[in-house]
Image (cartoon, rainbow, N blue to C red; front, side, top):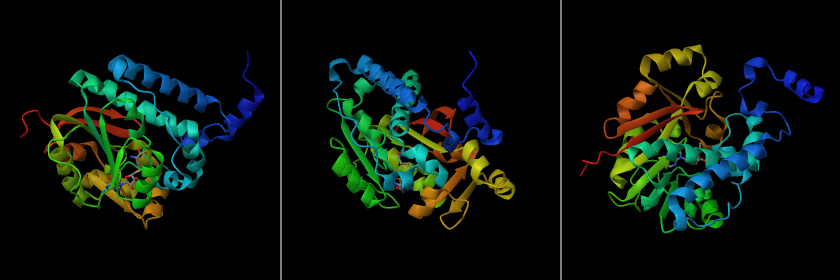
Length: 298
Ligand SMILES: C[S@@+](CC[C@H](N)C(=O)[O-])C[C@H]1O[C@@H](n2cnc3c(N)ncnc32)[C@H](O)[C@@H]1O
C-alpha cells in the first residue's frame, strides 16, 4: 500500500541535505516511543541475563530538567524539542550503555563482576541512573556544575554525586578503585591543556584492567559546526577548539561558558595511548572509544 500523503508532505519539507539532523525528525512521529521501548527491553534483557538474581528493579526517575538538558544535550536551539522528549532522553541512555557493554564483552567485561562505577560529567545522570539495577555496586558520579549535581542528588537516589573542579583531582576517589569509568560527551568540552590531567586522573582511579569509555566529536559535528577554514586547522593541528564566545559553538557550550573541542582520531589516540590501551573504536553520532588501564599497571 502507498504511504499516506501526510507522511509524504512532511518528508518533503525536510531538505535532503539536512535529513540526518535530529531536529528534522518527523513531528509527532511514533518512532521515539517505539525506539524507547525497544532499547529499554534490550538493555534489561541483557542485564537480567548477566546479573540474574543480582538485578533489581529501579524507577527511571524524572528526565533531566529542561535547564540541564539545554545545557548538556543541545547543539542548536531547534534541536531542543527532540532532546527534551522523554522517550529520546531515556532511549539514548539505554542504547548507549547496552552498546558499550556489548562492545566491552570480548575484552572480559561482565556486569556481574563489576563492583564500582564512576561517571565524569554526569549532567542529569542520564546514563549512570540505569546502572542502579546492579545490586551492591558502588555508583559515583561528578560534574563541574554544582546546580546539576544538586538536581541529581535530589532526583536520582542510589548514586553518590560530587562536584569537581575544572581540573583534577577527584577528592572522593582513591587510587585503583573503580572497575568502570565513563565520560560521555565530556572530553569534547575539556580544553586540551587540561585533558591530559583528566586522562591521568581516570587512570589513577581505575583499578588495573579497569575500563574507560569516552567519546569525541566526529564528522557529524564537524560538518555542522566548522567551516572550511576551521577544518583546515583541524587537519593541520589534529585538534580545534571553539570557545563559548564563538557563534559557531554549540548552544550548550554557549550557555555553560565551556568549550567545544574537536580532535582527529589520530590526536585522540596520541594523547590517550600514553596511559591506556585502546580496545575498540566506533564512529557514531560521536566517535566512541573503549579503553583499558593495562593490567600490568601498578
Ligand atoms: C554534553 S554534557 C553530557 C552530560 C552527560 N555525560 C550525558 O551524556 O548526558 C557535558 C557534561 O560535562 C560536564 N563537564 C564539562 N567539563 C567538565 C569537567 N572538567 N569535569 C566534569 N564535568 C565536566 C558539563 O557540565 C556537562 O554536564
